[in-house]
Image (cartoon, rainbow, N blue to C red; front, side, top):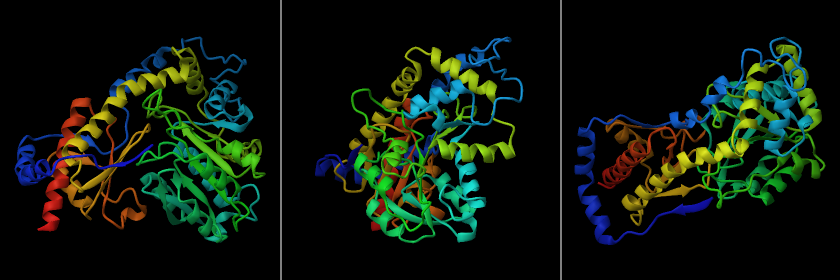
Length: 427
């Protein structure tokens, strides 16, 4: 991703905008707007790209190419062979190293973490729960990661998400504590800043000497293929292979899903890891379930294999819808806040979010003002554990769900709210 930008604006323009910020805010407020940039959801147009998946299977299309009747129980817990093969290609690993489950990768993460807590993972001396485990997270980061870990009883240790991935120096220091069992983060187009971990940092994590023999990399690769442009994109790392090369083949679990590829509420979650880890996880899932939804897996395979250009072709079509919205956010921020010194923001090459940081500790006030003017934003502090942003500065912007025109309108309001809140703070 590119670095944080401040843009260029003349002093006269900046002064003029500062003078009329409150007047412009009141005008926006009087319009009765109802705009939402709170969560990273696909738009209806994105969903429409996959509508043919609803009819891709006929009434007799229930048998997989490998001969499995998806209506019945048999088939195991690792997913149908065709789905494992498809998502092995997606993760650039072998099919034996993939387990395909039901909707939402967050559920698969929960299963792996619960297994670790109750039984331990490869190399564990015993159940993690007995060790009062800690988990490293990146900040700003994904609020659902924090909620999941805290709900399961993990103590969180935060490190900064830098332009090229987590602060690995800090990770190495924290990993000297044997209670620190791993790190959970988004490695590609991170939520919310859009950062992608570098190959160098990924190798350092794979080779890291930790006090805990079962220190694990939990990589939530939700945006692995979610590039905005064909000719300017970040390169995802392959943690499964890097850990294998480092002599720690069981160190990484890489999670992903089709939530922002097909249907957010009716997709497939999957995980890539060593074949030994997949066997371990499959044994656990086999005890709590007969298996995943095989009909849904077959439907996804048939649709994605038949889509023009395959899965990558579908992602290009998503990019055509999403990229203009990211460009609109950038355009408004440059025009309204560029050169003001009031805020910085990221310009990611992919993913679903943009991270805005105010220069003053006013993020909560900006969100409050925006809400009063009819623009819903992610609550201030949500990108930090316990919603405690130490600088009260970070605001996550989610431009994917609204229409392009609504994104432009919402960002005009956000920019004015930054100016109003800044003036209030300085008054």
